Amino acid sequence: MQLKETKPIRSKHKWTPEELEYLSNHYGLVSDKTIARNLNRSVYGVAWAVYRLGLRRKDNLYTAAELARTLGVEPETVIGWVRRGWLKCRKGPLKAGLNRVWGFSEKTVVKFLRQRPWVVNPKSMPEHYFCSVVKREWERDPWYTCQQAAPLLGVKADCTVEDYIHRGWLPADKKPHGSHGAWIIRLSAIQAFLASDPRPLSSHYMNSAARRRFLLETERASMLAVTWVIKCPSCQQRVRVTAPPRLRGVAVRERFIRLYVNGNCEHGSYCLIPTRTPK
Ligand SMILES: [Zn+2]
Image (cartoon, rainbow, N blue to C red; front, side, top):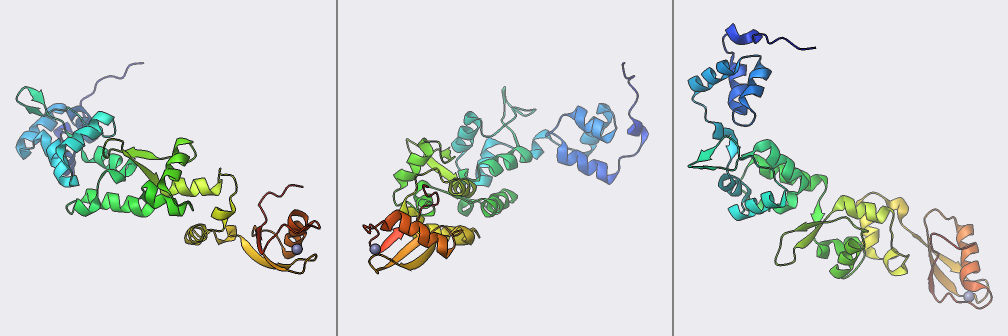
């Protein structure tokens, strides 16, 4: 079945202010054909209105230099993003001499900033809509360097965090920085990591102040371990026992005796009941 070409409905109508606004906001960003289709007008009608308004295609596009200025970075940085395939550009309708100039539409820049907001520093950005996009992204899902992520993961060294990344436990992005680049980790990745912690249980981390703070901040206080004081039935010593929050006192006592007492008292003054206790 073939649709018959018909004359666009609005060809004979006067341009409304809304149509003119749509045209000036989209000219150069999408093809003239698309604009014509969306307005239900002919391409000639669009060209006529463009001429009357004195629109230029590049008015709605950022050049690499303009974008760099708006984002507070060097133009080479913008070009680096394009080469990495992070930022889409169009060698669109613009020409400078024989070369086509790179143009960036606001839509693609916003999409790029939502995906990799850490490429820019809001503090060195001039006041602009792009700056608010980055700030909103920070509020939604902040990002950290390995050094900043280490305390959130309850470890001391940032190389431990890098180790988690290399093992594939912790998703991260690499930011161009120096000769090796720098890892960037989103909070959501850290939360997912902790929710199904792939590390072998370590009493050091489970009891660290960092983990406690992290769970409280992320409103998961129910995951905090509880510390009990239990009197050892064998040596009468008072022992601090840290146990998973779901265990009741009787269960904690029973496990404590099974794991640490057994007649030879291996408990010391402090011990830990692991989440998964061997039967
Ligand atoms: Zn004892």
